[in-house]
Length: 179
View 1 (cartoon, helix red, strand yellow):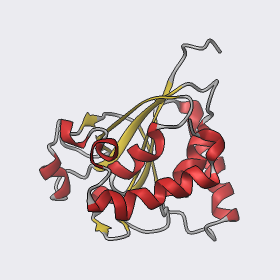
View 2 (tube, rainbow, N blue to C red):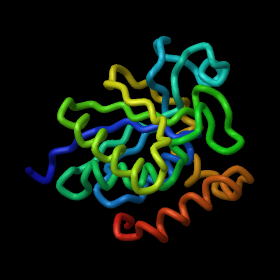
View 3 (cartoon, rainbow, N blue to C red):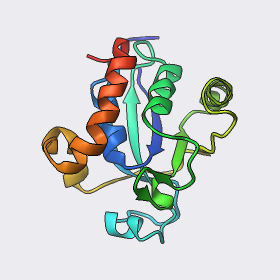
View 4 (cartoon, one colour):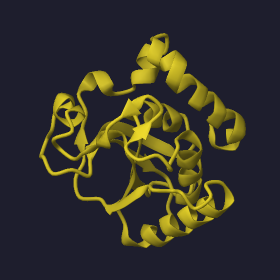
């Protein structure tokens, strides 16, 4: 593949601030945008999504260079930084918008995703992964203040208590993927 070829995957695993922070410094990731997907309302605002009426999940649309980081590696990070066995929640963040979800953009990625879920289910999660898998249809960027939230607000209590431990864990266990 040529160096300028990129692919996308859209991932949700709780609050999008956590997913965004975990992927922003990954080698081969070009862009991470926080937003909403998987629901039935066009161009929702954050307040609509967290109300539960849109069926959207908080997600990050990730643009990456597959010749630098593979989809398998991205999924490895994803399954390390969130709990894919809890329904509609991550820790104290509760609601359908916090569900574990993978929205694949390319049909050939579905087989990779299913194989990786099977692998992680067997190796780590005792066949309890409930991550929703959907074909990508649309993505709606969140408001500007949600973008690069951790980088811009890393001293805020949520960042210190929730995001930072996940980020430290990822960088310690999967440091080969980080800049």
